[in-house]
Length: 186
Image (cartoon, rainbow, N blue to C red; front, side, top):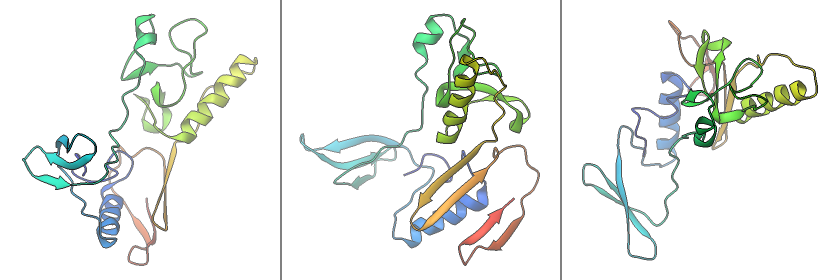
């Protein structure tokens, strides 16, 4: 069940979303996009179904919930750090509070690879690269955070790898063999 109109919408373009939607369905997954969950139903001991906003109940024995991320930066904001969707950091991952750094999913920074848009990049690699930037700064080797954003996901026997930020493009070019499951979208 996906609330957005397509899977992977935040990290991939429409071509990849369509490919992965087909891949999941070809593996027997009842994949539904553009649907909202009202609640989980149960018998008091375990889940028995997922009730959609339209009233349909999908029987279930187990539920895995991936709801995205809302950064838990309340204490930093209350302490005076600037931010809204995350805590704002400068080019060295410093918050507006003296000697306080923020890294990873909660850190909103001006991304050079998205035209300077202030954003959070939710990926393991981003968190690792920001941690390296902060560790160097603390050790006296301060250099701006300029890591190229990338993302990966293993799904079935496929490895999805994306490089860059999926925004601000005019067209796409597909290279390789989509039907053969080995291709790139640029």
